[in-house]
Length: 248
Image 1 (tube, rainbow, N blue to C red):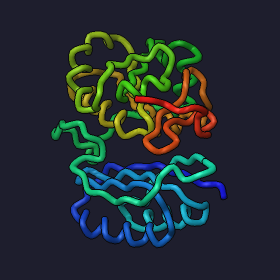
Image 2 (cartoon, helix red, strand yellow):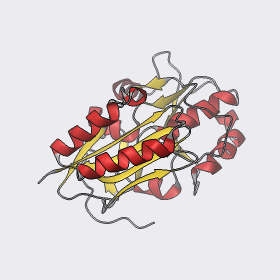
Image 3 (cartoon, rainbow, N blue to C red):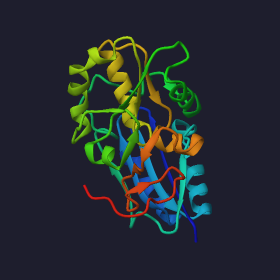
């Protein structure tokens, strides 16, 4: 059986997380799905694996909640499920930044689509002629697996280190267009909002992250593989599990 893997997220205020957790655990477990669902006051983050029918049913169930009606899962395939069990967990943030003033459910930085970004990178500048800086918001071991060519990365061990690092280097981005990127969109969305809050202009997030970029335009301008947080460890530009094993 071919396993379908999905990931998606939504920044939205959740005030009923206990009840939501119980309902999702029961329903998704009943479908035989494996993976992780994170629920925080700021939103939901979903990583699930299963058969085509089970995944489709799980997405229908998630979207039945009006708050998640526009969830847009990114898909990849594998021969085996990259998770061993289902976990629905409560967290304080779906991605830990430790910046409580950053509230993505109430604000969103501009996003750039994969096709547009590829065009900018092909040309070497954005549509207004400004240099484009790719800013990797991921942790050091993820960057080591692969990243965009000439990307700026700060060698951080955890995402909560990012705000101080980018603030210290804000002068580097004067007169340039900055595109923050990450695996699936969560970190680069928070990062772009933070950069706007400290006065950086012309900041974009890569819509859907690296995985959506791979899905829509392939691996152009990206070197290596994309680290993922499951037993595949990394996927190539064709969204298939990367050969070999990674070591942190």
